[in-house]
Length: 104
Image 1 (cartoon, helix red, strand yellow):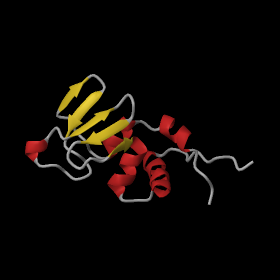
Image 2 (cartoon, one colour):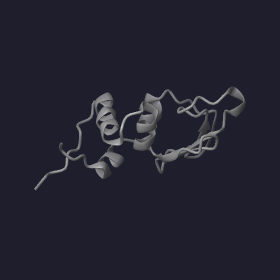
Image 3 (cartoon, one colour):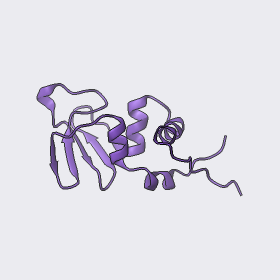
Image 4 (cartoon, helix red, strand yellow):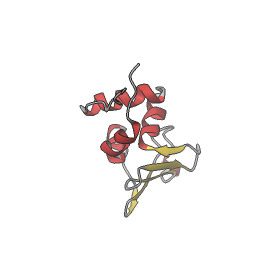
C-alpha cells in the first residue's frame, strides 16, 4: 500500500474546504475563529456554539463531545473512515491528486 504525504496534504487542503463538504454553517465568527453546531454529532439548537474551529490554523474543538484535531482528522471522524482511507476519500471528493510519498 503506497504511503500518503500527510504533511503535504495538510497544506494543500484547507479547513474551509472540509467544512464546506460537511455543510458547516458558522453562527458566529471572530476573525479566523468560527463557532457553530458540531458536524460530528449535530448538537441541538440550544448548543449552537459547541463547536469552534480556527480556519487559519486548521484546528477544531467540540466543547460537547470533546473531539478535536486538524481538518484531516475532522474528515475521518465525520466519515467514520480510518485516517488513511479518509485522506484518500477527501482528495477524491475535492478532485485533488493524492500526494503519494516517493518510496525511494
